[in-house]
Structures are given as structure tokens and as C-alpha cells.
Length: 186
Image (cartoon, rainbow, N blue to C red; front, side, top):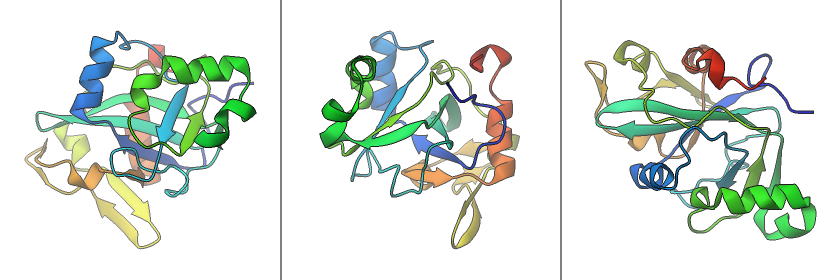
């Protein structure tokens, strides 16, 4: 049974999707589709969800920085994470078909596959307002930090988003509030 995007979720995280990846998804006609698979690995371009502490039940917000604005691209809840090397043996046929369909998300060196129920539709027209951008806060074992390089409601650099970062609960609520009712799976 799919887990809903709203409600009690252990943690929420952001993962940065590059402009190159977003352009590829636009060209490939993925706008409006609901992701069911994400890929992670050992490199900055495809960071490890496991190393970031992501577990089943957590929510992932894919974000993009485009022209000094932070865009909420989509959100997906994590159902399970499997090793990429073992995916062929562990996954059912329908899961394997999802891997093939979402190939543009795969990129280079991949070590893990994140599976979930259909997330929110992929969209590239949902910038977070400057006022909300200035309030976004991340949390870790070292404490909380706000998003860096924000000036006058504009995000000047994306470096503080490169990786997978756990959102503070209030910030997760802010991003969840940016999802429109038609975005949230039934």
C-alpha cells in the first residue's frame, strides 16, 4: 500500500537536480510525470541517500536552482532503498520497468536505488518565494543552519544545496505547503 506524501514523515530532505538534468527531463517529456525512482551514488552529482541518513518513510524534495531562484521540482516518499548492483535480483518486474523509464535520473556512477510510490508531478515552474527562501533551515548533528548565499530573496550560489540535506521540520512544512492539492497523490 502506498504511503502518502502528507502526514507523519520521519524526516524530509532536499536533493539538488542540476540544470543539465532538468533540461534533459524537459526534453524527454518528463514534465508532469510522477517519479517513482531516484538514484544515489558516491559522487557529488549523485549523492548517497543512505549516507545522508534517508530511510523508508522519509520524504525527498528534488530542487533546482535556476536564475537565482530555488524551484521545487517534485517530492517523493521513500518506500525502500536497494543496492543498485542487486536491483535486478531484488526487484519485481514492474520495479525494473520503473528503473528503465527513469533512466535520465540515473546519470553516472550509481550505487543505490530509492523506490517509492508515485511522487508529486515534476514541474519546473514552482519557484520558492524570496521570503520563504530566507527562512529555509537545515538540521544535522552539528545543529541548524540556514541556506547560504541568499541575498534580497535571491539565491546567488547553489553550493549549500549540493548533496542531500535534512530539512528542519518547519522548512519541510514550508516546502510541503508549496505543493498544490493536485500535486499530492491520492
